[in-house]
Image 1 (tube, rainbow, N blue to C red):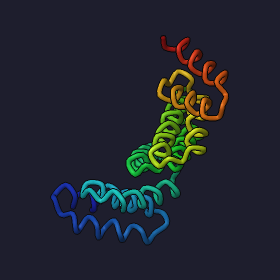
Image 2 (tube, rainbow, N blue to C red):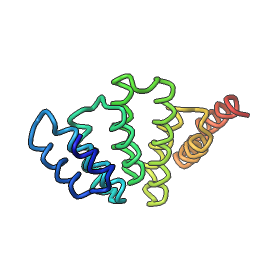
Image 3 (cartoon, rainbow, N blue to C red):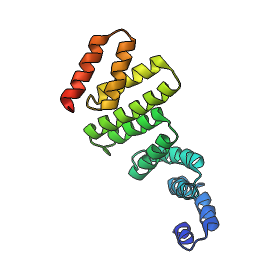
Amino acid sequence: ITAQAAEVSGDRRKAEEVYKRLLKDDTTRFVGVRGLMKQKLDAGQTDVALKLAETAFALKPRHVETQDTLLKLQAGEKDWSGARETLKTKLKHGGLPRDVHRRRDAVLALSEAKDLLDSESSIEMREAAIEANKLSPDLIPAAVMAAEGYVQQGKPRYATRVLKKAWDAQP
């Protein structure tokens, strides 16, 4: 409460001191880490905030706000595999319906494939695009990338099948 009062009054340094004191006790550690994380986010220090979010998530993986913050920071840093793990935990703890999880996981896999495409890592890109398409066949960019991957592998039938399935889902 003291830290929140200090934040409201604009005394960020005092709030930080209180949050750091909270880190020393196991029962208040999560509150301290979360408070410091919010301060670092407000200050624009996303790299430090990401580390704090990971710590807070390790302490309380069921905390929805921490899950969302960590997911957002991981996506911002293009840590697609970390973001997918966080998303999986969110599903596991009931914070996300299965269909929404599948769609978001497909989008993250597609983002990973696009990054791999930029780095010209063709095998990993193809695999990531194909996985994104399997997770959400109606995600058109994933279908196009997966089809391109199949064509590069010399499997035009699979490419045709993927595109037809995407067309059937969203003509």
